[in-house]
Image 1 (cartoon, one colour):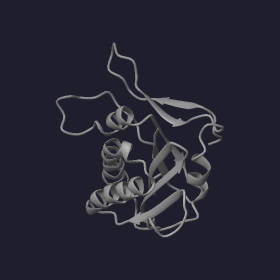
Image 2 (tube, rainbow, N blue to C red):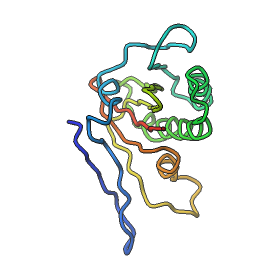
Image 3 (cartoon, rainbow, N blue to C red):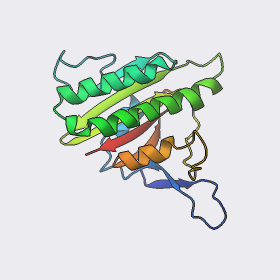
Image 4 (cartoon, helix red, strand yellow):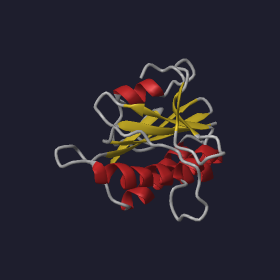
Length: 181
């Protein structure tokens, strides 16, 4: 993807407008796209170890990863003095990791790496959390079904972040990211 604005539309109920699924935003405003697409230099980093503006952790592809991802994101927010985003980030990180586990990991064949990564980045007052999985499938936001027990994850991400999107990675797979601030 080149960094141009792009929106995909999903199937809609007759009489309703389709909900857009943002994939990219203008590259000059989206400083986080290049590091996500090409890879970050700090892997499995821990707050308090050095001066840093980005952190990346590999997570086991199981549901214990959801809690760990929340804890890691909260630790980074505290370290960076950005706790004002804590409740929103906590919910969004949970949804991003859960979506990766439910929709990407089960589809991955044995020949591919089962990978989930959590990345957090900051620049000024902006905070990015992003979750990578090995699937090339782009998540599709759908109209909410308020009677269903599942299916509202991307709606919640859209409501609790300033914006969100998807960026394919050079190594394969994708990061689904959310911006705060």
